[in-house]
Image (tube, rainbow, N blue to C red; front, side, top):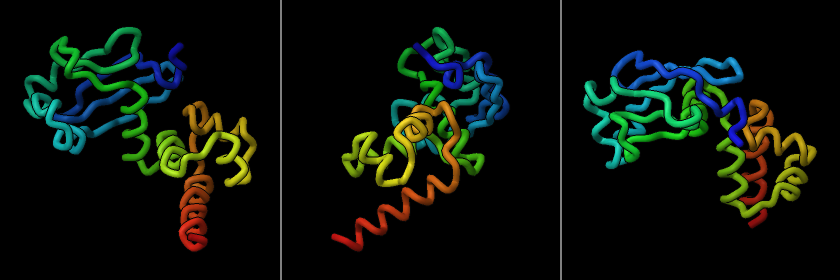
Length: 149
């Protein structure tokens, strides 16, 4: 099942390497993929404006594909995370990466942050935006763990 906040309903090329994304929850976001394309050799074809201009919705709105080529496909959830971060927000991937880096379960992570398990699960799933206070709490927790080590 693909949650509405990760289901694309429209994709428009707005500039070379930049997309406007519309999601089923009504959110519209801009994402610049210059850095992503430069970091991943498998995506170098997207640096060609003619190829990038072929951007289209993937099956069930779960991705964006180019040139009908499965090798040139980016997932809708990852695109949303990049767009949120580029707009100055904090994506659900921040929570995932923090938990993985510190080998924390959802219960352990919620306790460490002073959050309910359910609320942390909402943030981690992308169902609710990650507040700045939570992003700062992740950093503060890491500092405290580093001091204790």
